[in-house]
Amino acid sequence: MFIRNQFDKLSHIMRQNFSDNQINLIARRTGFVKRTRKLNASHFLNTLMFSVANQANRSLPDITADLSEHFAINISKEGLHKRFNKQGVAFLKELVRYHLSHHAPLFKPDKNFTRHFSGVNIKDSSKFSLPAINSDSYPGFGNFSKTNGLMNLQYEFDLISGNWKALDLVTTKTNDQLDSRNTIDSINQGELYIRDLGYITPFYLKSVIEKRAYFLNRIPAQAIIHTLKKEPIRWKNIKRRFEMTGAQALDMEILLYEREPVRCRLVVEPVSDTEYRRRLKAAHHSAKKHGVGITQEHKLRCRYNAFITNVNKEILPLEKIRKVYYLRWQVELVFKTWKSTFEIHKVKKVKTERMECQLLAKLLWVLLNWRLFQCSNQHVINNSPKTGVSLIKFFKRCIQFSHSLRLVILRRVKLKNWLNHTFLPLIENTRCEPPANKQTHYQILHSLNASP
Image (cartoon, rainbow, N blue to C red; front, side, top):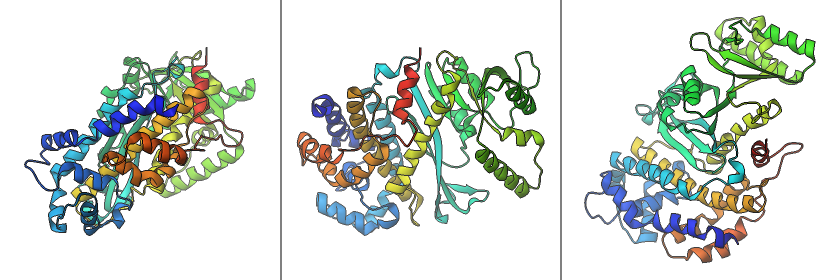
């Protein structure tokens, strides 16, 4: 059943988009290949993509040995070193863009999940330290990697279709707020955007509304809130309202920000005493570090979760707000997998172009396996809409079949045989299991679109 339903997609991805012709076409367009060489773009890509070791543990002789074993190419480490250049980086970045855009139409979301939102997009950034040799291209900042370099990955994906929407290697100068402004044109009508506070500005929120899309996020800490009659709302008033009504949560229409007001819903719910004490302790620590005090209003603010959204109550009632917002943590699982399983953050002292090439190639490997994950997920969801594949379980198995997958890409093993004898047996028992007394994100997505 799986092979019958998913074979055409996988064949398209592995046979066509990883063809020598397509890869070399992009290599010539980006200037990485200008004339015939014994090391062509396909060989370069393949050996970097399917490296078992992380970048910190892979030397130039390791790469030349791999080229000799798999392609009978003999190249000196000095010759290989020269291939890690600006054109090589441009080539791999263009390949990433090509795969993001070219594969996406193959994975259209199930209609059962798009009743209210045509996409549920999660975006965040992940940073990791680089050696000091890379600090000119990727400078650190503040107390975070001050003397070394710092990589900043901007990443966004759609929970419904599974498609990656963005993947960029940027410096810390492109912080989340600037990225939010620079990528405003990527917001699509009818899609829901769940983001960390770093991305949230009046410009971003107004742009989402203007594009007839939707946002859901926590309320910015310093944002001033008013009633629709432009009367200020204080946290002491919210506390009094909870005490008077005995409500478990409050849902109100507000104006957010003073200079550039944005009309939206504010949903507030109290946190547990344990969570309140944790927040208060963190606030005191931060205040002491910066030599300031904590206002009574700030202390009251610590007692509540507060979310803002422009989705109406009929589609997203207040009892579902927190669960839907916590879908955002799926991006943290992605980053956790990239670092703990694939060790993309483990780098050694090499020139910046080599570091970038090896990182981009590894991310292309992740993306290839993500397409396999999407196929597996669609197969499971089609049979049981409230279930899906566990991201962490699946990607642990990817390492086990990576060598044989490489042989499929190289056309040395038939795709159908590989699916039957290697892939399907290895991904058994990878369904997502709910934590104790909680729902999986698949169950939350299903309930979201099952709303009236």
